[in-house]
Image (cartoon, helix red, strand yellow):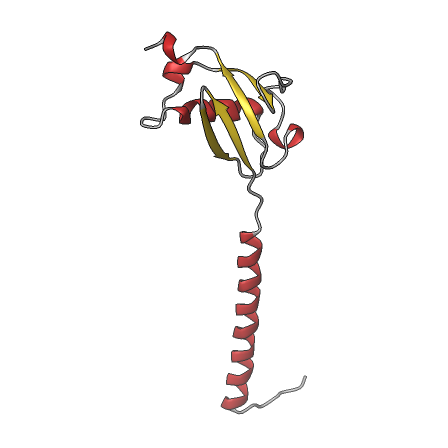
Amino acid sequence: MQIVFMKKKQLKQIHDKDEEEQDDNDEKEDIAVNKIESWHFVAHVHGKDIEISAGDATQRVKWLGHVAISRWDDDGRQGWKRLGIPIAVKMKDRNGSSIDLSASLRDVLQDGDRVFVETSLAPNETS
């Protein structure tokens, strides 16, 4: 067993160095947190383009349709009262192919994609 004696100044330097290293580690963790995936989509619903952030895009396509319908109502976020539910989500344009509503967003879309949401009701059917 070896006993080491140090002066207070030496101990303070070691302590300060440990704190600097901890600060560096904290900074690296902050950077990692900032690099978390955040996918975004634009959903077109009855004449409106709605930007939707989907985090890591593990939600289902049907979720994207529901969020778009909800946000179609600018005031109360209750678009479903006038538009019902999503019956189809399509790519590119209204004539595009339908996307499987039960598929994961990240499996069938790319970050930044634009989709068209078809609803079970037209806005004028419930006015």
